[in-house]
Image (tube, rainbow, N blue to C red; front, side):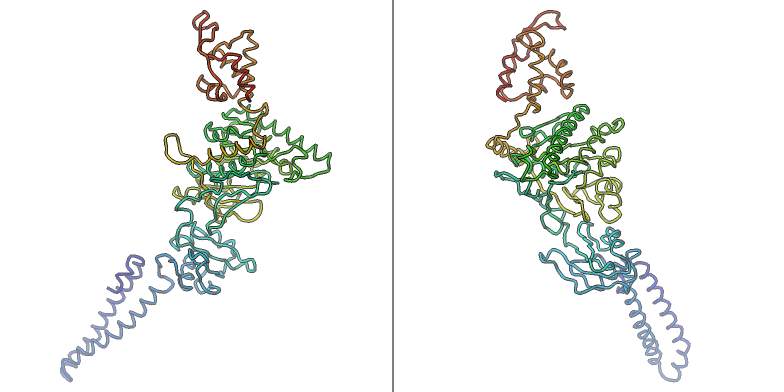
Length: 553
């Protein structure tokens, strides 16, 4: 009965202990039986019983002490570390991790205490192996502690290579209610030059922020459903609320960035490689203009104080799902120009942000990754993908994005230009699908951004806006035809695809959706129909209506 409680956790030792006790019992009975007859005759029957009981009592006590020591010693299997471990528990569990050393070689420095928020326990241990090797055993240690890997943090002690600070949370900090973004409900301007961008909260509950100013760029990587798009919204919404910042957006999925269209200075909403290359070239030209102006003035950096002087507002160039443009490229036609741009844009107020759900070498090659110096890695499939997201060897050092579970939405590692990655849970912004209930935080923020830019006179009005280029292309096609009216939509779309490659494959509904509001179609456009072989009335756009829409912009 005493050993039954140990059977599930240490069956081998229990069975050996029971076998040993059977041997002791039989030996005691055999030894006592040899003198039983003589004792019966010389003393009394009671003496035999007393002798046997005495032998069994002594042997049983010795065996019980021995087995208890074995069960509670180095071979015992503690069911998790718990929330209030002893120094002995901690040393013995660490000793069960291969390569950590024996329990008597591990020291617990000072008391094991609760943290300030009383949500975790902390301890400092000194081990026979250096901290970097302890860190590589992060997941094994978490397994012995019977906690999620995200509940455990192992950090170095600067004054000793052999010491490690352990922080172990009572509950998984990467689950539970979402971390709401502080941008929700904000209506005042954001200053991207001086305000840090909130990304989320660390496992310790502290805010995690970063600044894109004077940095080359960021790679956001995470498989579908990991929370990658919501993580990117933290930066996008912050830049949108800066009325002087420009947003150049590339939406390869065609639906992910639609909410930002009203504040985008340039917008590519289709996976068109040629149009993307042209957009990168325009941004490269702007980078060169800024560098030349800075060189003439003897200035080596665009800042929040001098950007007006050089007409160089902060530019965020964000590409969602970069793999749509890089996979199958020839001779680096996409990644080489983008990588060169990122390598030179640090000082000129341009920031490159690239996101992908396929972190692979053929998607983001080494040259481009080397120039995206900030990394945000969400849940990935496998250590190879994790290392591409965070940097070579990071998974082996305990920073493994593939360890995140589907329940840990928004769980990520942020790797800055210096230091180790920080584990965090990214901020949350609600974006309900059509028909779903709830606030649409991104649209509300963009609406506030439109009002801020309207007051500041910085709403996108340049000729590079998608709707402007679309209208001007349509007007040019109609005027070139020599007719007062359009050839009808069926004639317009093929001609439009030749002028604007991003419109290839559009139907009438796509065209109507891309035009500014109040651009009316007409059902009474007279034009020759190739299919009918005669002039007929067909839906289309009148030239006067198109010109009026252009003037409103």
